Amino acid sequence: MLGGTVRGKTTRLRLPTLDDLPQVDRWAADMRVRRGGPMGRIGEPCASSTWKERFNDVVKDKDCVLWLIEADSAAVGLAKIRFSGAPAADAVDIQQFLIDPGHWHKGHGFDAALTLHRWIFDIVHLRCVNIELPVDQLSALRIAEKLGYERFAHGHEAFYRDSAYVDQYRMRMTLRTWDERWGAEHREYPAPLGPELEA
Ligand SMILES: CC(C)(COP(=O)(O)OP(=O)(O)OC[C@H]1O[C@@H](n2cnc3c(N)ncnc32)[C@H](O)[C@@H]1OP(=O)(O)O)[C@@H](O)C(=O)NCCC(=O)NCCS
Image (tube, rainbow, N blue to C red; front, side, top):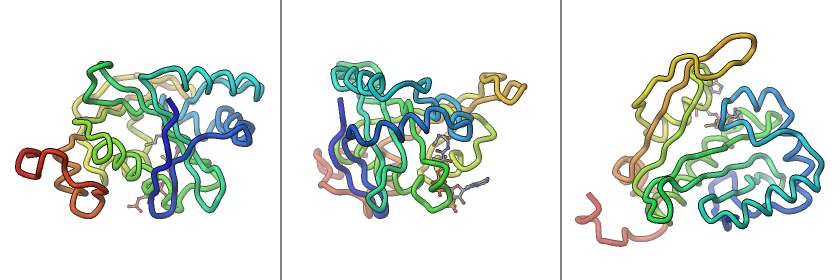
């Protein structure tokens, strides 16, 4: 599926368009993005027509949701999640999440991540979200830590990169953490079951 519009403070999650495809291809080829591990690898670089085909496949896949991340009217990144245990899924894995290196360190990564988690926890009301990150991906780990992720597994030598193996963390964030840390300020809708049943 393609996700609809979700607004953050400096970023907006929106539908991808044909005009975005050359940019997406550049991200696929950018080694600074790819070294972010699985979340930075959106596929191998290819012709725009092939990206169109790939996105059409995502449209037909009811277990995935894909957004382009926009800031100041420019496409600055991409996010894709997969429902874990569909069709009765109450958890998601973030499969891909990246910001264009030309826009790093402006706060877009955190703002878009917070916006994505508002969709996951507040709008769709899922229970849990999982990620996998290389242990040396410090900006991504910082975003996860600020959101409230907890580490639950350490994989050894999980990725081969820069002529060496690198470990990975598996991390999880729950609806309870969202509500405690972000629920008051970032909730868009009242808790569906009432606050007392959400605990
Ligand atoms: C991870 C990524 C999304 C961050 O994007 P970004 O727009 O630069 O992120 P932000 O500007 O919001 O910065 C996030 C935090 O990381 C911190 N940070 C940035 N570089 C850092 C570094 N080298 N060491 C420690 N912290 C760092 C920032 O200071 C910020 O923390 P703060 O808010 O406490 O100041 C981007 O680097 C990326 O796309 N990487 C490749 C793909 C990837 O790793 N995906 C996984 C994403 S979770």
